[in-house]
Length: 206
Image (cartoon, rainbow, N blue to C red; front, side, top):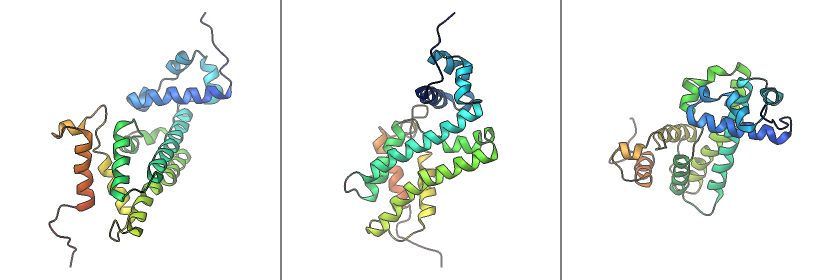
């Protein structure tokens, strides 16, 4: 019989989450396999269940961990040095494109059904306070420093998130599909449309 290490230790919980994260980024919720995780970590499934009672519980904790990590990542980029709003958003988009991240569209379209209502509420709250508000802060501070005209920062943040859906990543190199040579060039085009619009002059409904 293969040897199994003690899977009840605290560090095992974090290792389980790391393994689940790899599987999730590689293929979404359906790709998270408890037996595969147990085999990789050389623990029994019983030891895995000591930390997470089922796949749903593991997925829930994984989502909270991903959102917390993204919040930390974005806050560090936003707070680094004296940057314009454009520079802040550009850095966020470049980082987002170069690293696997939580696919909000896929989650809302397919995976939210795997959580119970209370878990859905908690993930939604974590996303709003841990991600949305951090990004909204960029637009709010952009107005205060004079980079941006007065606007509805909530709408601006939603627009930014929807633009980020078009970001290139490993499975979908959008910059190549759209005919741009590299990520930086493609992201600059996306951000220019978001920041400057398409009209020749600013206009508003009469």
